[in-house]
Image 1 (cartoon, rainbow, N blue to C red):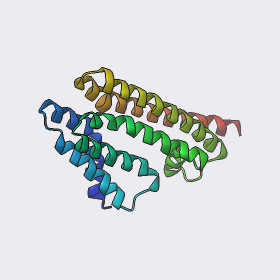
Image 2 (tube, one colour):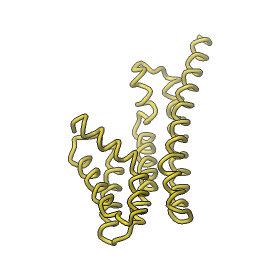
Image 3 (cartoon, one colour):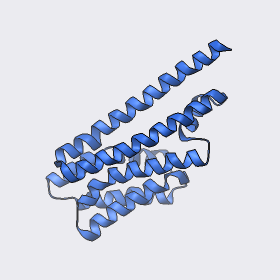
Image 4 (cartoon, rainbow, N blue to C red):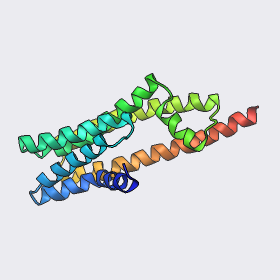
Length: 184
């Protein structure tokens, strides 16, 4: 998939909660359902990473069920499924290493030492826990909250929490590395 198309799909999925909120406020959610299906199909037919298949399948499923059942609730459920899909992806890498966080860490440090591998595996467990909690909160926003609260959590707060976890892990990993280097 070209860099431009990947960028458009990524931006569209990041803005997804806002698109859903806007479409529901205007009573026109069908175009968002179609857009979600298109994003899923673009991912499906690209030669992307097989690890992303759960996210791809959930996009097509939620968009398709929204259209078939004429029910916008499926659009609001997509962030729940995204967290479930991310959990599946991260948990799979714990079963078939390297762990997801190790893969990310090796982008910056190809020669990650054993201590780093152990550390990143533990952090991958933490991310799995995060995705479970995030899925539960996202589901609660679908079932118990207004669309405005749903958009606020799924389009802003959850991203902030992911950013904090990502930055915190990076800073703590650097600290751990310095401690292990000082002990040598």
